[in-house]
Length: 351
Image (cartoon, rainbow, N blue to C red; front, side):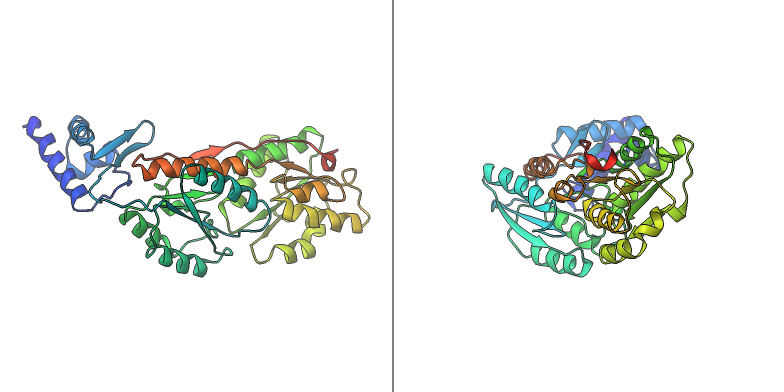
């Protein structure tokens, strides 16, 4: 009977794929989950998955799982890729977009650029528009990626239409089976804080962004470094801001949150530069009275009154790698997430 169980399970899973229950690019339940769902042994599940794999309906990726590889939907390739970013012409995003456009052009694709201005209503309008446009794939920087997102249904609809989606910089936890290319923000927060600890600082403040995943992960790295080294983590020395409140929060509370500290980890250079100016205006010397370390290594950091030590975002390389993975997805190859390391060059603000 065991011999026939795996054939029945194969038929059941094949039908689920053909009927659209599991769609192209989607990850199937794990072997353990399928065992529980269908009341059979892991050997039965493995045999059934092996047949689906041999038929070309699925593809196994070591360390990740089994993905649907159905080619039922025949498409005419338009060689258009949509790129949805929070912003287009600001801060480090032009460098990321330059990498994206360079790699798309090298592979014969045209980029269609859209900006959400980090608003979920704009994101919904844009994704709805894209569902009606002739695109082969979508690169998207998540909007307020640390908050609940009301637009997940649209991303799932894109995938149902056979349009691959890859996230960059951040991603939504409720779409964890969608691939992404991001920086290792938790490790970055840890490394930034440890750099200050090695320099003898024991009272280190932190300023982080509340409404995206990067801010949460950088905070977790910061907190881990303090705790690991036996230092005090206090809420009074941590300031949180959102996209719309950044300037106001830093101007109002930047001096207060750092007043009992000798160093500060800033979410990015857009925070570090205004804070530096506040400190200098208040008569504080940097780095003698307050050391500053930041993220992104933007032009802002180099042009500041004191050159700011800032972890180096891969920028253009991240854009290039995101395109390479999306093109593979367009060709029917499932992709796993990529977490890229931060670079580091010490400058004047840490002494």
